[in-house]
Length: 541
Image 1: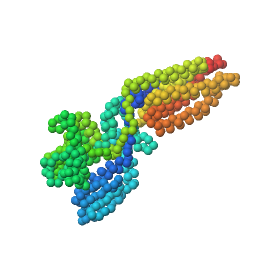
Image 2: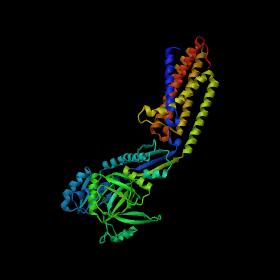
Image 3: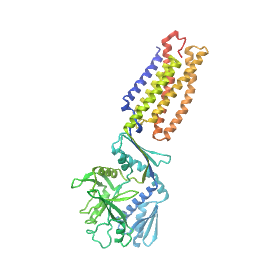
Image 4: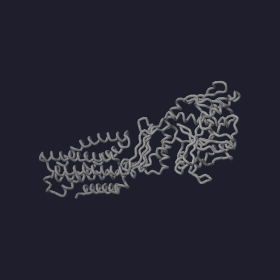
């Protein structure tokens, strides 16, 4: 064997060994998709419009806290439109200080006065657009934190859709879809809020009514502007639920972004609870609020863009600074989930689930078995045809096709090592792409073999026929594969999970078939000529 041919076979052997190393054992080296491995598939839609309402709620609290810090009294701060807040009851003597405080806080927001101690702040259109854009990115980050905390191996959390306002979550191996949905969709934030007691009542003796109508009656028919009604559904030991309606201040003392950490804890009776730690600034505010409300009730509220719910209403028995626990009759799992939600942060918009499905492990195994059987039958059928029709040259095609499949699996396993963070997943449509690749790869061999037959039919030598056959067929093969490759790249770029799986194996298979059909197959013919020597007067094709 001449040296150039020997080095070519050494290179081929090295590629074969590397492909075998990265593809075996396949259950460890090949990442299986959700449809083969089993797990949860959830497609979520972020309602960006609700993010503006959530941002206005946060701004309302910040304004109330800043005015209080600066010694400016006011009656109430209320929403007065989609992107408008009204601050009512500000003394005329504090007008200049109020404008300066609002300007320092809100920057480009429109600030105006409506007379009679009422100030208006309006979020500009540019800020509204920025809030809506940022809502998807923040939601994506929070969902990733929650998924990571679940301990799921190789999850997928990514944006999807032309507008970029959809988020795809795939969790291989997860079967408890109900818990996953509750965790992912919870837009929960924690608030500590003072109770706005009805006029003339003793805070130590007052108890909230069961209906909002009863609460309104205690206020003479209407709640003050700075007060809102929030329901608590208290669960008794026997499982019965009793509603209570609390009148709470609109401006909260503590909000979710004031939390530094949240974790599952226990109360003094050993029951599950949620412990929390506040930031330094929030700790100062909480210390002042608990000192002011000592002997009174402060409600712990879970709030979201959709709703608010009181989960606990303890009496403040002492001054609390930056640490505490929340008791709410939690189960162990509920305390764990709530701590995770609070720790990961509040989702800043409403999130709807528009598609969900669960694939069981048994269904995944059946899919693998069916895919392998169909792929094997197709492969054997193609091989049988090639051997019958092209005789000994068909064995050349068999070797090239076998190597083609090995290269596909080897590349799938090697991608994480070749490219940092890259990850290719084999899906059920990916198996279909694998079968299609086998057909396209053998098509390349057919083109080459037919060209060689034509050259032999014109009376050319075996060596010349092989060279001319490969040379003339190369451009046709290249044109066919490149056009298909472009289509596969677009499928991968704009398709969803299953379509991406199909595109991945198709792209890898096309590149592998170019190598095996054009390079490997030719070297096998060259080896046959070397072994025949001068006797190479005919070719079994």
